Length: 168
Image (cartoon, rainbow, N blue to C red):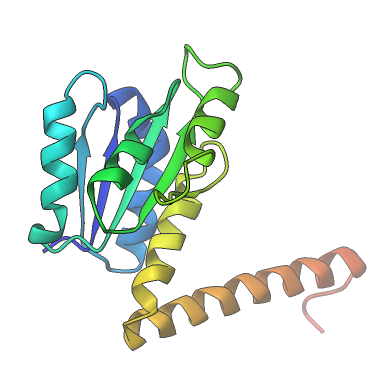
């Protein structure tokens, strides 16, 4: 059963939202991915949000551009955590309309919001939410953080010692 549901307003959002799917795949977390438009298929959105938990979904990642109602409307219809991904779309005002539509939710309807086009961070946040109740996933998150740390330390070493002979 999928642990994370990834939804987006249209297939034009897929190149961005695919980053969340890649993160989940890297962590071995099952997910489902669907196109669910808040404006063009509102009945589908309602059905999806109200029944996701019945399919085993624990977290929903919702990406949307423009008016970006999908994350907030989904959050209003489910008790599951929803992570919103604002997407800069062709009809967007540099993405600000999407960011503010998702970020400025009224009290009582929380949506965690990542940066513009930051579906990778949405995937990582979903993984961390799942890690709160799963020691195996928590260990994977810790390993991921250690790998990032080692990359930075290696980069720092390379910058400080650009002419170092690696064969010593």
